[in-house]
Image (tube, rainbow, N blue to C red; front, side, top):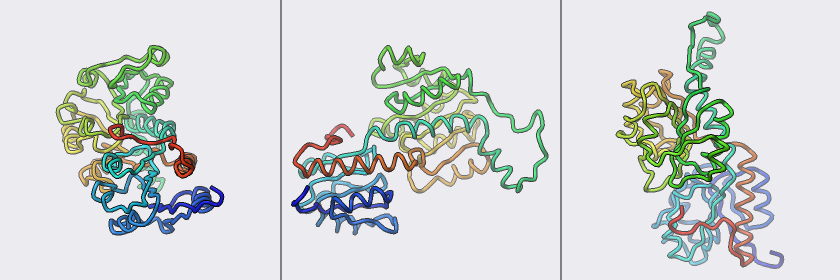
Amino acid sequence: MTNKKKPTVYITRTLPDVVETRMRELFDAELNVDDRPRSRAELENAVARVDVLVPTVTDRIDAALIEAAGPQLKLIATFSNGTDHIDIEAASRRGITVTNTPNVLTEDTADMAMALILAVPRRLAEGARILTDRKGDWEGWSPTWMLGHRVGGKRLGIIGMGRIGTAVARRAKAFGLSIHYHNRNRVSLQTEEALEATYWDSLDQMLARVDIVSINCPSTPATYHLMSARRLALMRPGSYIVNTARGGVMDETALIKCIREGSIAGAGLDVFENEPLVNPKLLKLAHENKVVLLPHMSSATIESRIEMGEKVIINIRTYFDGHRPPDRVLPGRN
């Protein structure tokens, strides 16, 4: 990029120092120093004047915002794996390229899914809260106190056997869980054999037969409320459900009702339908130790954030060097 005008880049949130420093070296980058979510007016102002927009999953880049962009906006390089917050079709109509940061969050997200798979049946959050609420003053060990459920030997049903779902399956198998999965397409025979995994082409049939469900599918119109009231009702009494994918895959109102009625034993959620807002009824269930709630932190490692930033930088540099960015997102594939 020597002797070329640096592209103007607008970054909507604070990124790791090493990423921001490199962006300032390579581009005319406008940082978000105080990490305050950008307002709609600020986003509209940015797309009207910059060459590159670097949003995150919390920014809504809809058709109206894209139509407000000036002719100089050539690239939306989102700092995220998912792209459901961007209207890819609208961007394509305007000749704006969209890129993402795939294949970075797999292991971290799978770690968190496995952590919730362990935490919910074993009552880990409840146990920790007992000590902190009582300031360390507890009655001591008892044979029948804080009894949870063993995860080894249970059946785990994975919804979405992509990279993350497969990574969850590897971890779960090591903990002695029996792997079952539902996916649009069956995985390879080698993968099935390595994981000793059972494929179900019917999600309904799988849900009725497993003890723990892990949601690992992408957010698309087809997966919105995939776990509907009808499907949640198919789960076995005493079963658990974990979601580290997207909040919209779960019908939260139906889930709350099932847990209240006892038809599902509990849930571990890292994502919510109306983030950053969390349903007060879910918070109440958490206080009653019936669910474990986390603030969308499954991918929150410094390693993943730096790798994501590096991908954003590569996509921007590749585009302005006149080549096709490696992580281009095409319409109909988000």
